[in-house]
Image 1: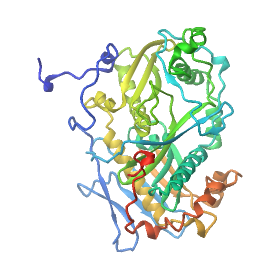
Image 2: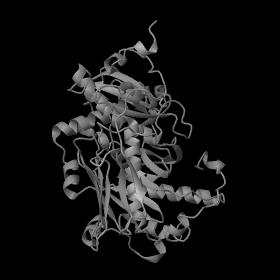
Image 3: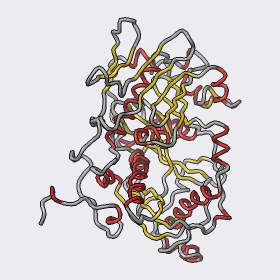
Image 4: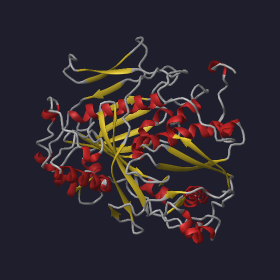
Amino acid sequence: MASPSNKRKRSISELLTDDATVPGSENEKHGTSPPRTRRKIDENDASGQNVIVPEVESPSNDQGKVQNHETKAPTQLAFLAYPDLTRSKPSSVLFQQPSQLTTFSYTPEHVQEFTNSAMRYFVDPPSGANLSYGFERWIRKPDTRGRLDALLKAISKVKRNVEEQNGKLPEIGVVSWRGVMTKILTSPYENRDGWELNVMSINGTLYFEEHLTDARLQEKNNMEPRQKTQTYYGYAFESYCTSDSPHSSRHATERESHHGWGGDVDTNVQWCSVVRTKLGDTRLIIGGEVDCVRGKYTGQTDAFVELKTSLAIKGRHDEIKFEKKLCKFYFQSFLLGVPEIVVGFRTPAGVLTTVQSFKTIQIPRMVRGKPGAWDPLVCLEFGHRVLSLLKDITRKHSVQAENRQSVPVWRVKFVPGSGLRVNELEAAEVADVVNQEDRVGFLPRWYWNEIQDEGSLNSPEGAHKSAPAQPALTALGGWQL
């Protein structure tokens, strides 16, 4: 038998032909990795400003440089350069296994309720399923601004539950939807689509909201027919793969009415999970939709399944495109603690040809060492640098909630191939973010009022002092970080 060093790396197309498991673990350190630069904060700069500079290998190397310009103008700018993937050598950045705090559902009227009524169970889809089926009956939820309201309600509920047990939550560094964090982490390998977010910092916590202009919202709500059809294929695959019962035979009549169809698509109905995790030294609370669970739901993320579709792989060109797509597949699941991704491969006409299950933690090894392959360590390090940059910027303008009824709102704009730019919004731009709603910045007024009482407990001064260790909250199953 050949030694491990002589084994040929199996292609994606080969993996799809059998049920073989990809060996190894995520912590194995082998293969080549792209370069990186490191940043440091020089708090003793002669000008008295908190200038962020890179550690460089030579005077001419300015990759990874972060510039923070202070002027008398109300808008302060910062820039984080696009990572140089040909040179960087990433370091390992800690990412803690996500642990679930709570779940909630959206009803057909898209009303949030703290139940599992929208939870679905995985079932095997039928071979040759028609992913166009039911398109004309699709109930499509319009795209709207990426507000945090539902996630904030979930956090507020968790806080009340902890307080009822005489406990106390640890300091939260970032609150974000899963999609926003996915965009940040996958930016080093994004060469087509830019993105923008709004950022606020209250009592040491960063809040992220995706910024969608009216023009972008109109574009998303008026997709071209071809794009709309391809989007529907993914939802139809979810219908074929899910049931409202762990024992699909209970609804066999419905499912067999059209070869395993699980019900017409209504994107108002969603089941969401809220988890806590940690990237580097920053604690995060992330919320995101979960497609279904496999078998018994345990109350944690270990049974979660993410469902995806992709064009059938016919050759090396298709395989390269799929491997690139795996980067987003991986981080979407990784961030929420989803252990399994089921991919339905289809024809251009929307006929399901093959279904393959991937273990999330093994996906990086499937592409490692291949030309142009993405590296999760590069993504995690870039994400850590983004969070550090935003903390450094907003720390200078941190606001205690009880002291004022407004707070700076920052705009982060990522341009593929260039980098990430941050600026503070002017009053007219903040008014556009508020959008004539009852908000402070993009935070709902009720949440702003709720956290006013927390301002004195989480003041910037207190954040820099040594805080006593918090007792473990056993009822939350590992909430203590």
